Amino acid sequence: MRAGDRIEIEHRPDHEVTIGLVFRARMSDPTLLPALLPADALSEELKAYVAKKTGLRRLPANQE
Image 1 (cartoon, one colour):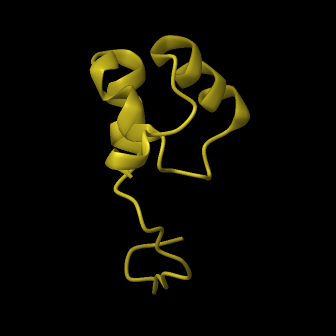
Image 2 (image 1 turned 135 degrees about the vertical axis):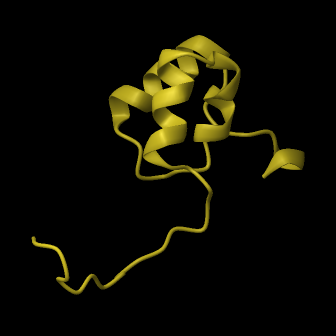
């Protein structure tokens, strides 16, 4: 990939989870961990980490 190359978005998920959010939640602000739960594409390792730290495997129904 070089400057000026065309980039095409093939899929845009319906959540606000970004690499930056994941990094901040893991490294400096664990209060953000529940915000990662809407992302189905998280690795199993990361899902297990969030579950262990928060006690949650998914957001409560009223927060989805």
